[in-house]
Image 1 (cartoon, rainbow, N blue to C red):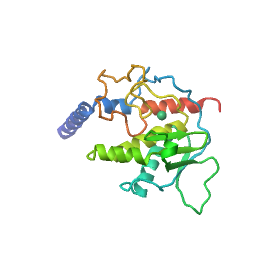
Image 2: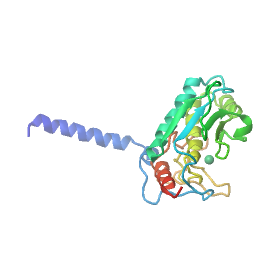
Image 3: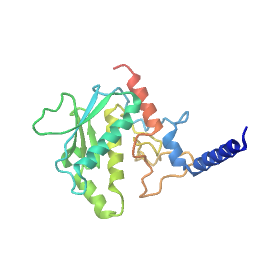
Image 4: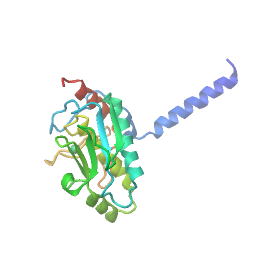
Amino acid sequence: MRPSLNATWFVALALVSLTLAAQSVREREMAQCLAGEIVTWGDGRDRPANKVPLVFVYDHSGAPDWFSEEQVLAAVQRSALAWSACGVPNAVQRFKPESVVPDGAVRVQWSEKNSGGNFAQADLGRGLLAMSPAMFRLLNTRNPAHDARETLQMVISHEMGHHFGLMAHSRRCVDVTSYYDNGKGERCFTRDGILPRPGFEYRATLPTACDIARCIQANSAER
Ligand SMILES: [Zn+2]
């Protein structure tokens, strides 16, 4: 073997170890789902998606000024693409007043009423994924330095997860479908046992390896 190749290998290996060391617990949790890590709060029963392919139609009316239509549409597309890893075909469209929304499509909209006082809410019966302009306004007022696009991406991925059939909320803090606590004093879990700092969003912005694994399970069940 030529010495130069040895040197190349050495550098490559050193880089790999450095990269691994630099990866935080949170990043590793996002990338990999270990045995026994799929745990939910038991607040719902996973099942296959309502309609396949799942079609999401984004309507920008009523959105906060600082989100452009392209920005939100791109976020919806990113979440849908990430959830595609679970094998449920889907598509994202832009809402056009003159066109007909496909039967069974999920309307992604801005609506105070339909978001029920949350950042966003999924209504599977009515085929809605509603986001709250007021909650995003509040976020912007309270913490202008915070990147609202991250919250936007997280809430879209979370609510989309319900449309993909994940009805229960995850107990694993990092999952996009997680709830940090169950309202009864029990907390979500992390691999190193350190709980998310208050005010810091520990949840991933896109579905994690465990979210996808659970989605595969949910959609392989009898329809
Ligand atoms: Zn939820």
